Amino acid sequence: MNRTRQTLFAIAILLSGSAAALAEDVKAGDLVISQAWSRATPGGAKVAGGYLVIENKGTAPDRLVGVSADIAGKAEIHEMAMDNGVMKMRALDKGLVVDPGKMVKLAPGGNHLMLQELKGPFKQGDKVPVTLQFEKAGKVAVSLDVQGVGAQAPGDAGHSGHMDMKKMPDHSGMKMK
Image (cartoon, rainbow, N blue to C red; front, side, top):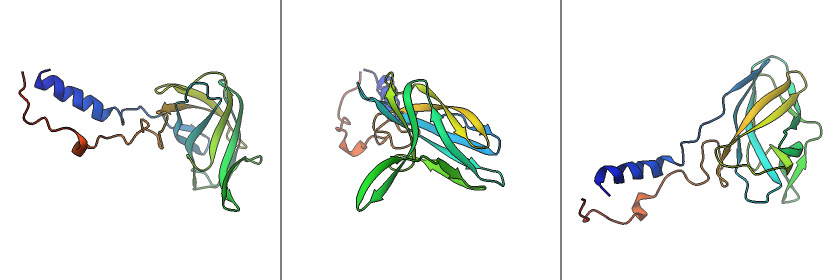
């Protein structure tokens, strides 16, 4: 392998963790929905989480009251909360308030969309359409950008996104052809 090819190969590996395209911001009334994403699902998985940021730029509160997705038989708004020292997940039956001038983040380990009874897998690079239902803004269509199985944030390919160059073998003495 010549030096140019090696360099291009190394660059491709380094960039693979951060090259995911992120969802476009969606505006609905006074709300802006951004950073909509999910994780790839392992084979046979029947549930997936959805994550995003909702910003209310208006002067009145709005409430996320529902979610639906054609790929899921059931979809709910969930929270993760400590209960007597145990982390528990539960549906938010009354939805999630987005106060004026505030931002609500749905993220792993906290509030999130729970897509259940999946009709197919989520594959890295897919865009999964979901519909959010708000009290005031109404129905809002967004697409979840599917990241790697272990992703913790949008644009994360499911690993740290970089290589530890200190653990790479030393090839400085190799002859290049």
